[in-house]
Length: 389
Image 1 (spheres, helix red, strand yellow):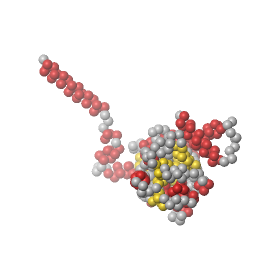
Image 2 (cartoon, one colour):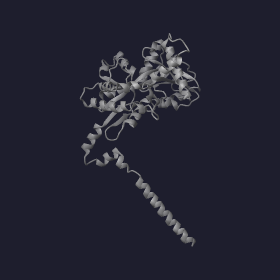
Image 3 (cartoon, helix red, strand yellow):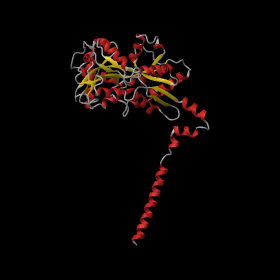
């Protein structure tokens, strides 16, 4: 009896397992039925030209930045939100930064857009590397402000301490080295610059082979958030008068960099604007149509990009914000003209600044002599509000 019961139980278990497995299999979706990539592979050989034409026609390529930076995170966010499988695919390229993105837009086949820094074009023209380059490019929108991060041993207390020291400023095709050159030159500080990829430079800094790393990236930077070394810290960058023409005051917080900034404290720094740029294509061309399709998808979903789990810097994006010295992309301007109410609704930074102004009522004089002091107060107030939330 015992053996018979055992056999019956075994049979019942096997049958139940088989039924469960069968039901599970039936409830699953075949990846080949939903994956556009697999569909394309399966069709390869029978209708190669048709498949290739469709994939290329529906793909828009965006040049971003190096791994660990904000540019590449923004590219990934765009692909996550805007890809719809059949009609639009966003292909972000892991690039080399601002200068390379400009070169990619100008010369690399298939690159429709790129993330660049606002001070890059002025630098290229003033140094004689390019002439009338701004006429070749347009901007789709201002994205966000990028903060200057200076990572060094705690013996380095100010930028002036880096005079004559060896400082890594990223790859020579990026934008960090341009901002670093401008800032140190205007402040009269003369370090020895080396052009090393960020992850490699970090190991060299830990080994004492270099004295500091400069990186201009949107806060919070994934790279610096992960740094936890008691010997290192973020060096303050004062908002000197020589920097005010092209840069904004900003702060790095302990909430974003708990391994580098003591809890409850902030580190002063400067910030520069990042833009989404495109080639100044003529209407009716393929590149023009690509930008047009991208703008329609991107601008229509900006509210979704401002929500978690996407990068916090999306909250700073103001679609209608103008950029001095740059021409707006015509497809972008046309969209803004048709959707003026939508474009003007959401500028979170502006809204919070207005909240701050209301906060000041009755607490201090209505007019503040130094606008920079007001802005610095606003940044501190904004940080306090975020902590309360």
